[in-house]
Image (cartoon, rainbow, N blue to C red; front, side):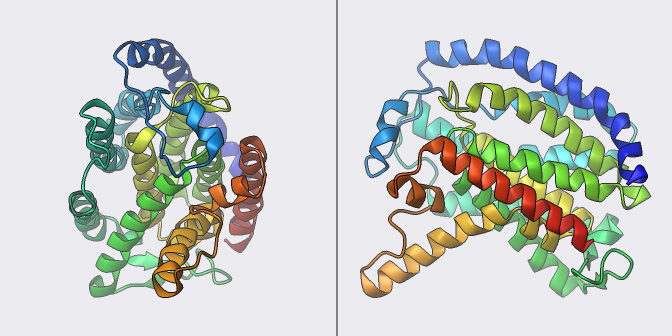
Length: 327
């Protein structure tokens, strides 16, 4: 435990600087986005309580991505692996930005087509996977629960490459699906980042992971101040896809993708709810959930947004603790 708490103070400055930058940016960007009418349209088939959110500014992911670039760029001068994490996060964020831009600014209801979005995700995932498998030894390993960090499973390249691409694409989409309620994706991701920070303390070579987590978490908290219910701004695809890319990239660089699935069980549940809903409806014309993703199911059951966010956050705290114990 002393080892864990010994590494955290080293990241405090990065966390606080990123937090301060994000708060300052939010106070500038939110009025700006309102002025240029970058409002998020709400789906017609969504919960009735969401209709009042129509017009709320989006592109909020920029609030934590800009501090990530500035603060992270400074730390990247000492460790190029932080630069890699910045680039892969921005790569996923760029895909989300174009999607948001087409939907909000150009008024294209669907944004990027599924084919265009998937192609972008595969390109970014492929580029990162090439780097990780080539230069990061741990990226070709997989830490198995109950066996732990001391004996990770070595993966051949033919397995490591498709597995890495799958994790990147799946988790970026899963985080994006989770971003459907005020503060939900940001709160869940904050606790998952805490898990990754604690996990990084178990290996002396993973200090760059805790540094990057601190930078991203600080900016994310600054964003959350304005995103909690009632949200003054949404993170948009630019933020959600970026967060999913960052989390999955860090897990792959440490061989801990399975643990990310445990700590981020909410992301997994949200994504599975959509897969199950679509597959079952195509087969039977009936729905398993009142509405997918999962958070909307509980809204239709009468839960308030704040209750869903609180319960999902508590589940993430428990799942993160379980993931740490399994290390």
